[in-house]
Image (cartoon, rainbow, N blue to C red):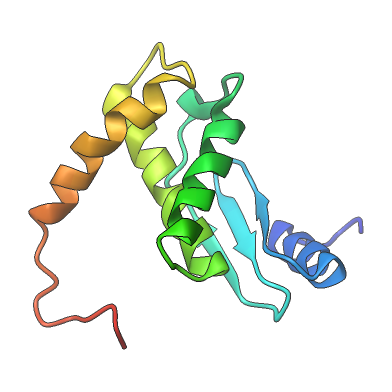
Amino acid sequence: MPGTSKVDKTRTAAARAGAIVVLKGADTVIAAPDGLAVIDANGTPWLATAGSGDVLGGMILGMLAQGMSAVWGASAAVWLHGEAAKAFGPGLIAEDLPEMLPEVLRGLESLSLDGWSLDG
């Protein structure tokens, strides 16, 4: 697939696998088999550490266990993963990520959606 974009590659992989595909990087791409793609630019170099992908996998499964759809659960987990890494900062190891989630979630509680609804 030379010459195709990261988004195109991820969409193709998702379509072939019939599953959600997460291609990690500075801009992580999450793609669904139907062609929907989400680009998350919330990454940080601090996530380039052994085990951070395993933690992300667990976070995605946690979202699914709470009833989120696969593509939006993966997207939410990827964003939270990046925020947790940013909250910790330099020196991050994978085991630090879950410990930062309460701080990240508390920060979300203070946000106002100003009339927006996630329910559609």
